[in-house]
Image (cartoon, rainbow, N blue to C red; front, side, top):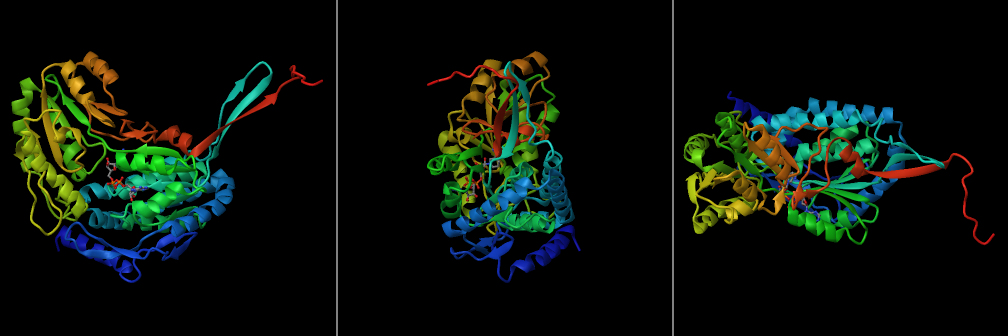
Length: 502
Ligand code: NAD
C-alpha cells in the first residue's frame, strides 16, 4: 500500500467518530449542541462533506463565557506547580496524537502532510515552553523610592477570547491558548469555521490531561455571529485574534463598548530583498520556501520578491524552473509540496489575481491557472515585470503566488519594501554587513530575518507593524497581554502626609 493510501486509511478511521453527531461546542467540559443549528464542513481536497458542526450563536457564547468566568478563580489560584503539570500533560497528549491531528488538519485545510506533521509537534512545544514559565509569570520588580518600597506583580486578566484563522489552525490556536493558560486565564476559543476539526481534538486532549471543566471552552461557528458575540461579551476581558486586517478593525469596533483589550496578528505583504552580493543559491531556496510552502497561506510568507536588476534575469530563470517543478497534489501524499486552497471563496480570490496581473500589465512567468476541478488546486504562480503599484504587489493574495519587482539601488529597494500598508516580516539577503545593519534599521516590519527564511524562536517577539498587527506574542510579551500589571507601594517609614482640613 502506498504512503498516500496508508494515510487515507488512517484518516478515515479517525474521521469516523465524527459521522454520528458531528462536532458540538465544548462548554464546561460538556458537549453542547447550542442554539444556532449546524453547518457542514467540507474538505478542499475533493469538496466532500466531512461532518456537521454546531453553528454557535450569542447564547452559546454567553454560556461559554459564563463557564470561563466560573472556572477562573479555581484556575487562577491553582498552585503553579499543578498548572504547569497539566500543561506538560497537554503537550504529551498532543505528541501522542500528533499523527491524528496532522491527518485531520491536512484533510480539513488542504495543507500538505510534509508541513503539517511538524505543525502538531510545534503545538506541543508551545505548551511546553509556556508551562516552563508558569512559576515565574507573576513575578515583578522591586522599585525602591525614598519613602516607599514599591513592588510590581502580575495577575491574570480574567476569561479571554481566542479567535483563530484556518491557516495552520492547530499550531496557531496553541500559540494563543498556551500562554493564556500559563498566565492563569480561562479561555473561550472560537476556531475558524473553515477548519473546526483540530480545535475539537485540542480541547479533548486538554481535558484528558486534567484541565478543569470550563478552563478551555470551544464554540464553533462563524465570525459574524459567534465571533462577534465573543468580542462583545462583558465577561471576556481580552481578545487575542489572528486573521485578516479588516476583521481586526471590526473587532476593535465591536469591543469598544466593553473596552476590550485586543492583540492582533493580521495580514502581510512581506518583501524579500535579494542584493547582488547575496549567496544566491541559498536566497533562491529561501524565496521559494517562504511563498510556496504551506500553500502560500501563511501570514509571514514573502510574497514580494525585490530583486536587484543586475541579477534579475538569471535569478528569475532559476526561479521559474523550480516553481514549475513544485509538486501539486493530494495533501496526504508525503511527496506533495502544495495542496488545495482552503475553500471555494479563497480559490476564487486567489485565481482572480491571475486576471488582475494581466490587466495591470505584469507577466505570468509560471502557473497562473487552476489544476483540475476536483478540489481547490492552483499551480504555484510567479508574476514578473511587475511594479509596486500593481494590485498583485499591494494586496495580500494568501496563496502560492509570488510577485517579482526589480530595483537598482539600496534606497529604491527600501522605498519599495516600505511602500505597503503592511509591516509584518521582511527578509534581507546580502553579505554586506553594514548594508544589512543600515537596511534592517529602516525596514518597516515587526520581524526581520537576514540571510534566513522565517525561523521561529519562541522567546522572541512575534507580531507586526502598521496594518499587520498590534502587540507581540512570545516570551514575556505574551504575559504582558494576558496579565494585568499591579503596583503596590509599602511605606517604609513615616513620610509626611499633607493634612487637609486639620
Ligand atoms: P478572517 O479574519 O476572515 O477570520 C479569522 C477568524 O475571525 C475566524 O475565526 C472568523 O470566523 C473570525 N471572524 C470573522 N469576522 C469576525 C468578526 N466580525 N468578529 C469576530 N470574529 C470574526 O481570517 P482568515 O481568512 O480565517 O485567515 C487568513 C488571514 O489571517 C490572513 O490575512 C493572514 O495573513 C492572517 N494571519 C495572520 C497571522 C499573523 O500572525 N500575523 C497568522 C496567520 C494568519
